[in-house]
Amino acid sequence: MPALKKTVLTVTSAVLLSTFVVGPASAVSKDTTDDPKPTAPMSKVGGGRLGLVGTQVDLGPGAPVLPKDLTGRSWIVADAESGEVLASHNPHWRLPPASTLKMLFADTVMDAPELQPKTLTHKVTNKDLADVGEGSSLVGVKERLTYTVHDLWLGVFLRSGNDAVHVLSSMYGGVPKTVTAMQAHAEELQALDTHVVSPDGYDAPGQVSSAYDLTLFARSGLQKEDFREYCSTATAEFPGEKKAGKKREAFQIQNTNRLLTGDVGVEPYKGIAGVKNGYTTHAGNTFTGVAERNGKVLLVTVMNPKSHESHAVYKEAASLLDWGFDAAGKVTPVGELVPPKSAETGTGKGMESGGGQSTTGANGAANKGKHGSGTTKTAAAGSSGVGIALGIVGGVLVLLAGGVFLVNRRWPLPDLVRRLPRR
Image (cartoon, rainbow, N blue to C red; front, side):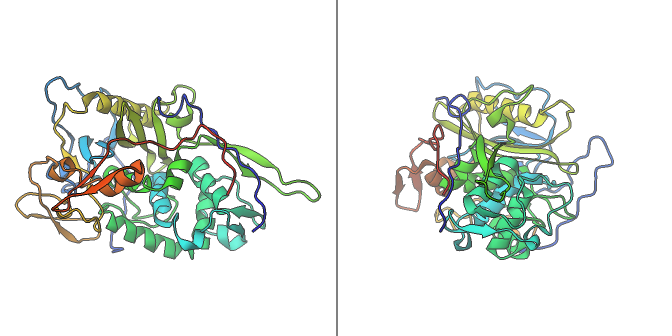
């Protein structure tokens, strides 16, 4: 394997911690009204209240009210470790996801043998880039040039490069194989609102996901050290053109997640550590983020704010995170982030409750539920989030009688105030 150049991954401490069968899914037509509404019934995965139209929150004594002027068509804020959903608004509304779908792409193929090790190099061909959609976000991958897998993941996460996604998909076995694997993984994660058509999130008829599902993708992906590293990297050096007789140059790329890097009118969010943003004319702005404050780790997803304010998706996500940190322990959860199907929780699948009623996901499969009140018994027991929490925390796991897992509450996110070599 050729020697690799050095890439600088820089994240300032001020930015970081302060301290898913394939089945029919209806194509979503472009909205013809200024205020479209979700069609009922929506999925009840994670609890019956999550399938209701409108905002769901159960404030207790001393709990702050939700932020005013939230315009996202769909949003959710949840405890990343316990899986408790603190509040939601149409979280199962099937909407175009834009580039936030890259979280599912990464979680599906990042550890695949075809993409190991990260030092693996690939010379890009015309075929690799043939299906990149017109107007796609690009990192600048060029035909006939060689890149490492590490380079390409930087392009995916920082610049949301559809070109990098397609090269990695080609290395994995092609776009059709990648899409099939992503759909299967979404089903395994019980992300049943999701129908995958393109691996990069580029607008395609029938391609949908939901705030709930995107949050599941983030929570699963954050188990992976590399996923955490890439999604929380603010800037990096990406290989540029190769000129005869000269050393190959590199150029700096910056993460397009404005809660991580900041921009005019939006400050870096204190405690932010990723994960992914997206935008298309069809999907509008979408964003999933994870942040920590005083030992509490929250996930938030906002889809397609109606506000025309610049960076509205980030501002609304930040206000929901602020609310969530203040409200933690003062609200009754309205649902839960369910565990993967394969999670050995001993408490069932964490699906909707309601006397054994079934709910139909995007694949048309009926799923029986367990809890009926919207409270999160499995989450409270620590079982719903065990796989995710364990991966993120990298900490203590104890298996108790009855299959209930406990994990420690500490989430030491990766130390990114450092320089890392390309691998």
